[in-house]
Amino acid sequence: PKRVRTHHLREMKERGERFSMLTAYDQYAAATFDEAGIDVLLVGDSASNNVFGNETSLPVTVDELIPLTRAVSRSARRALVVGDLPFGSYQASPEQAYLTAARFMKEGGAHCVKLEGGVEMVPQIERLTRGGIPVMAHIGFTPQSEHALGGYRVQGRGETSARVLADAEAVQGAGAFAVVMEMVPGDVAGEVTRALSIPTIGIGAGAECDGQVLVWQDAFGLRTGTMARFVKQYADVHGVLLQAARDYADDVRAGTFPGPEHTF
Ligand code: KIV
Ligand code: NA
Image (cartoon, rainbow, N blue to C red; front, side, top):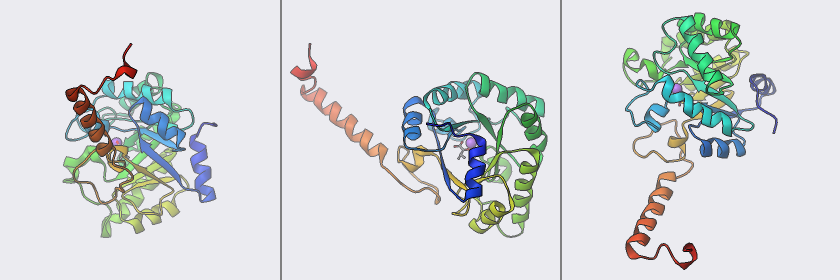
């Protein structure tokens, strides 16, 4: 299959074709989603919660994310692989951002990186773009700024919609090839999508974005518990694994596994 490139996403936007993106943090998820035709795989800093068991995305480190990125980039034959720069690894300066992003490309095999922020990230986006690293921006609700934003809440309601548009135009102007919009009212996301020439990718940002992204552990039901309103449930992977593990434990207790057919 022909590799998805950043320019393909832009061409899809121009043709009015939607594209899909999912998180992936390991070999089998990456290979399966790639086989399914998912266009973009994000090695998200959401691995902090979904792989490492943290409460938020803040604690995860570059050293923890790079091996996951390498696993995904080795396993995806077609999808564009995005490395997500974690909290504290790019905000300090454009130089810090470049050194971190270069590690995701060299050691992780990422094809591009994602970072959170709008107007304030223009110097970082310009530096990376100039240095040959394609950048996907992430605006609206940005989880790494949870404490600064005062919790998980929709961004860009009412008068603050101008801020979302200003952020979107700033990241496009700085050279970003796409922008994720998280928890933004659907009409605002639609307006931004029409205003930009680069593709927008929504998560909790309505149906008018050029692409959509979800965390697979949420959408496919590996994680249980409270789910954000924007998550659609496509499967119950937790239920499948739970039943399989129970059946195995029962078999072992009962002595019905291994059978003669499993024995040398
Ligand atoms: O880390 C992540 O999973 C993300 C997506 C929610 C866009 O940034
Ligand atoms: Na992220």
